Length: 411
Image 1 (cartoon, helix red, strand yellow):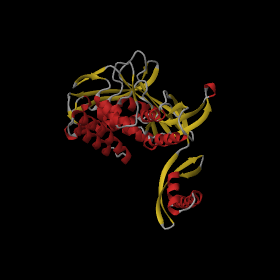
Image 2 (cartoon, helix red, strand yellow; image 1 turned 120 degrees about the vertical axis):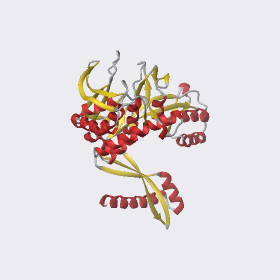
Image 3 (tube, helix red, strand yellow; image 1 turned 60 degrees about the vertical axis):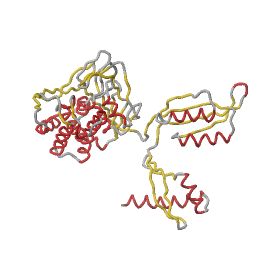
Image 4 (cartoon, one colour; image 1 turned 90 degrees about the vertical axis):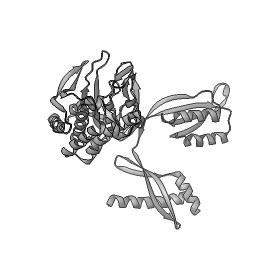
């Protein structure tokens, strides 16, 4: 199964995510009861009413949180909120994964404030996040995720819309996204983007939950068969779009899907030695693959087409290398989606000719069949060390790895 979180239009907040999970199929009454039981761990705040109701958001039927509070608190220590959340998840007898998730969410929120203000985490005070709202969101989301069994599922996230303009809060006015949002996303793999909403679309609570929930960022929906959809409404209304977070649950095909960049440039005045060196340098910069094709261009001129597959995080260094090493005056860039057979990296210790070696290999699985491929650099190193051909070395290593795999399957 795969879960797709889609905040690319309306962003994400804690209550939007909670509502979308309940709309996806989580037990509403169970969530409400769990939140009400948690209320006692945060003295000074009372939940007068909590419910979820269907509403129309710009033509989209979605679920919205109805929350009425009685509290007159404008500041709380982050540690106080954390203690209340931990007491809540322990009282509710949740799984260890669920407890760790809830703790990670509030830790991320506290850590971001600590780094922004340059103070120890134990000294962090919340203003906007001081309300029991924060506990409601994190505890409620944790309960809903466990109820749906989503801690065991693959969860991916589309680019997160953060809005634009400026935002005003306890520390004054600053450009949106605010520092807390940027700090939360800084060390994650998730992608953010702005738009012309002129409002904050992603809240700190929504962001901290998201970075601890999504396994990876994707630019497009994966190839999947849709089974259920949850729509969670935000509190704000916008003229040009529905303020709704979508969560889609479905089954993936046998392939994984990702997005890569394709870099291409034609060079016609450099030697084969330079091209060979270029391949090594580009691979060292993190390219997924490099190919060079011979061809003919205008006026019958021979050329070499250099084609590189890379990702967003390596494109800058690779383009620099292409220009510096080849002297090219232009590089074409395109986006490409890939179907990838699922694979995993493994490492084993083997002894050959009385010498110990570490062998790295990739194991793939497709339609019930598994295979593995030994890293060529390891084959080359080991074959040289024992003075055997690469073919002989590979035959021996494959036998050893097959034995280990068989033993693991039976253990």
